[in-house]
Picture 1 (cartoon, rainbow over the protein chains, first blue to last red):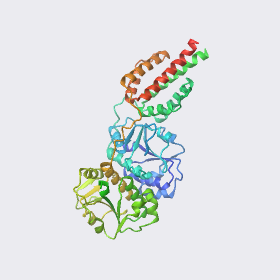
Picture 2: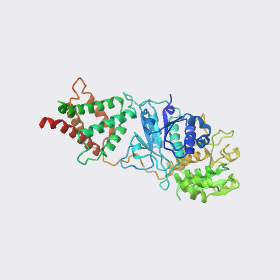
Picture 3: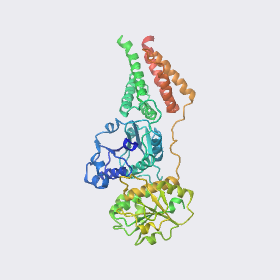
Picture 4: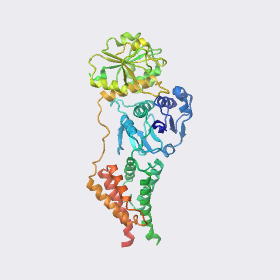
Length: 246
Length: 246
């Protein structure tokens, strides 16, 4: 499997089927094949087929999801495209830097998802918090609103430019990356423990979870680390319960 | 006049007005404004306006020519995009190299034209021979047929990347980094809590701390995050102690 085969383009709630087709064409010109679409307004649709031109196979083999979760749960690395600065920023790379990052080797053999948001308002904060990195396409301050398929084209172009001929060289790391699904379960466990130890009481905002989530995504946790953290949380829970049960 | 103002995009005999609009939008996102159209099949056209979105002014101020000659005669430098190798090759640069060439400085104060050919068969040999350089966009050998407006987007993106007013956007962060000392104290606190909750009992190796430590260093924690983690650990400790003291 080449690195390009590992890339999954995820379109989140696209409104115009034409953009799905144009995105598929953009992908194929840059050697990408795996398209996932979350809750599209209209798809399949003749407009998507027409705009796909020679990339119709990508449209035909696209996977449609009701929610984002299932589109990324088996992925080892998730990045989201964002034009806006967020109040809790996640490490930001330019499209080119993302290509270079891939070239250096992201340490996972699982799929690598690139999320693209809605035409009108992009990805939600919640969706962006599921990402290990954010990608920004440098654009004019006067008008930075790239069409959805154009954004796919530019990011795919940078990926192809860096990795066209490359196999995935895994970083020197001694463990497999944890899947996005496992990290999410661990995060929910932490939230539960925080509730149990009263961490969210006394006016401490649940906003803390946003920061925890960001930390975990930034970490690119490996499987052993997720197990370590789960073990830690289990022990905290057992330590709290014991006196009550005894 | 900035370098971006000097760039002129020339669409040669575009067949679909939608592509003219999409090209205008692509230009505007990358700070380009000057659009010339040679012998278009349909233009002006409502489809061009619609696809231009926020770049309608570029459409309204576009210059239409009957022939290529008048579109480039006042230019100091002309480049043409080409997917095919030509029988009489002209110096070829990639889109990125063209951006770098511009940055280094092309010795002219006259407009710099970038020609884009017809959707179906690009620029003719005669048209390509009018060019100082050819630009090629790296693309998949299997399918290198970028949509016209997509090609405009990629080339404009490379121009903007080299010549726009790019700030370094990868280092934005909203908090000060935590000192190594604070991270160390937090790590020791974690170790203490791990002892208190019996995490190191039952043969679980203290080696776990090595991995926790590596995680924290990889994170480059900020001050708020260290406080968050300390708060969490304090709460764990208080939850454990309460029954014993009560």
